[in-house]
Length: 319
Image (cartoon, rainbow, N blue to C red; front, top):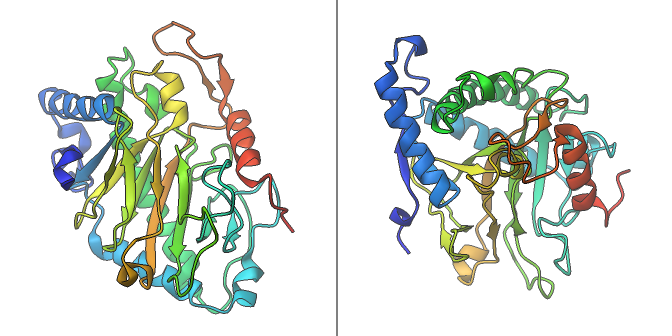
């Protein structure tokens, strides 16, 4: 199915290219909000274009991450995630499952970063740490603008409501994180039932996903049919997460997605990369239905995240 099966929203009029966001008129914000709401309420995900994060910065992140993943295993393990309650660190090959019901672990590696957690960084790649911090800041600024528009789209009386619930992004008190995913080339047969990333929905408010040009990501539409989220140069795939679904009492639904092992032998021999900026409300935010329906039991953000991360890692041990 063509990429056009996934809605595209042009964010140029409120993206990071707009130096003064207060100069944007209400009419423009309302129009953009409607486009975003229509996309999220019908599919749960969209392509965001003209968002204002420069492609050269995305490319630089892919390059510095590739340098990390190209290191010997023993070097990468010096940065391994070391504590069950920490999000920071290296996730070794075949050490987690996107779908906890899958028979074997996913064929991928990752590096997680959130400024709230301390952790090791690769000693021989000084630009690695600085790149992650700088890119994190760009993602925060873009996220705040998307949250502004979502508050309008949801017709909240306080247009700053969602932004205010994410005030601590990048600081203690918020678990928003960047994950660099790396899918090594498949040089031999995989284990029965193994995939690159098992079917799952993301846990938080939403995800900004940056892809390389290889492809492979599949998104489940509301009719339970998977469609390929083919890479579009300069586009971010924005995905609704579990907490936003609870918050909106299912007005916006968390999107299941996956990455299977490619059928093509050529594709199997290619490595693949992506970045996810996982947006979470502040740790102490109580997520309760915005429409007053109490469709879901209120829950504290951090309690929910700890629960789902425990499930994700329960089959493996953290050193």
